[in-house]
Amino acid sequence: MFDLVRAYKENFERLKRIAEKKEYVFNPNKDWVGQVITLMCNNFEEFGKYFCPCKQHHPVEPETDVICPCPSLDDEIERDGHCHCRLFLKPGTEKAQMNILETITCPG
Image (cartoon, rainbow, N blue to C red; front, top):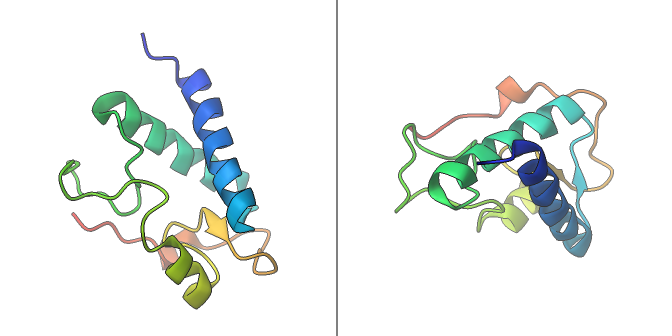
């Protein structure tokens, strides 16, 4: 049986290590971070991969959808100060709340 709490903690730690290695920070909007990570965990439960919930098709297309962190992560952060889903941010670009709806578009 899938344990979402355990999966969440494992995925959070995985993403935290990536952020630390790349010297990025998480979005300070903890609700948003929680939603993105939970959706990734749901994808992992169903497909065995952490598909990016903000770039995935609906329904998921396992052959073409990207896994978080996506290959364009560094380019997006360099260009915009954040990744597409605003999960990872360049330090110093954080805001207490971000209007996620301004940036999120799903491909399918």
